Length: 236
Image 1 (cartoon, rainbow, N blue to C red):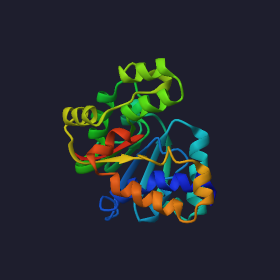
Image 2: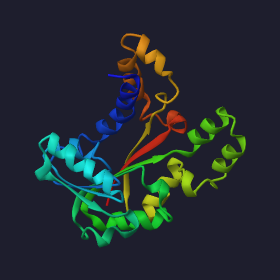
Image 3: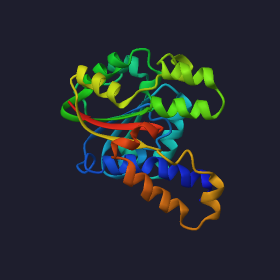
């Protein structure tokens, strides 16, 4: 496994840990922007029926190949579409779990997007929301010498191609307004983006030690502002 693959594993492990109980009972899962199926196929392997909605036909073609390769093609479907027009693609109250990872940043109206997700969830269903976190984005830009960009992100003015960035308080407010009840908040990639890849290559056991550390600090609120992403589980 390459350093980039090991780093990727540390970036997703905490999310999977958070989802373990949510995905314990097979049901209908909707993956918004699921692309090539990095999450969807693994969810299907747990026995769920997974529908992926993504705007890219190339990504959906890759999803089909991946699902076939892993023997879950009968439980994975791909449909072309975007979150803004989701109800034209899937029905209301059609999902037990909705995965919305890395999508809320690029929609024009995050509040309206969350209202749409609430509509497609069945009563008592769970939303898994993974978004870029503003405080870490400010630090990353400042450390790279992009001070004007850092100030724009700090002020909440960095949208468009760069995407929205959220604080945990902003997320919970948006979710409350959309009728969700926040169950848990975890910091994702608190240290993983800061550790040099060469260290993971050269130090035996470094990847596992980094993963253990990420899991230990993920639920500690004092480390949340350092996290590149915030993962929220909310019910509706």
